Amino acid sequence: MKTKLTLLLALACCAFGQTVDTLPAHLIGFGPTWNRGANNPYSADLNFAVRVGTTKFYSYTSVATPISFQTGGQPVASSITTGGAYVAVQSAGGAVSLVFIAQAGFSSLQQTSTISPQFSGSVGVDFRIGKSPVHVMPFAKAANASTSATSGALATAVLQPGIQVLFSFGGK
Image (cartoon, rainbow, N blue to C red):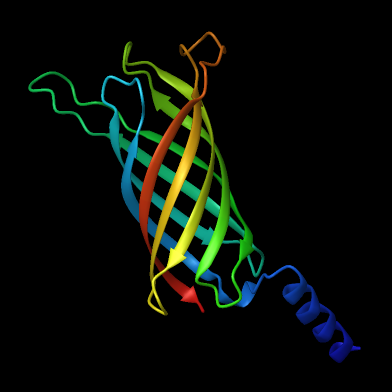
């Protein structure tokens, strides 16, 4: 029975082009994103991902800090979101992966400095550099922050392109 189950799992991985064994256990990444239309359109993002068991799912948390070039005044607040990432497809050797990310959290409205809910969805293509623990992932994020802390109304989604340099550890 164990042999049949192993064979079935191996065939399923081949059929979907997914080699789950090549996914790392943890990822830490950083990089810039561009938020079109914001007072401070560039932000420095820091991401943490932890694989959920041996699945293709990750717990994914991001901290985005707007890069402010203003002199004086108050610093611009960061936003923090958490959610999940799903590795939809991966090449046989694990060098290229298609990743979907969905997150929710809180952000600071730059116009009023109030805290509001934030939702985002991203799609990225992760490229592992050879057999090293270094990955590069260009992505596009659609973020949808609330228009005020109390309104509950959501602003139009804004497309935010970005790129991450990720370091993996644990797993294979």
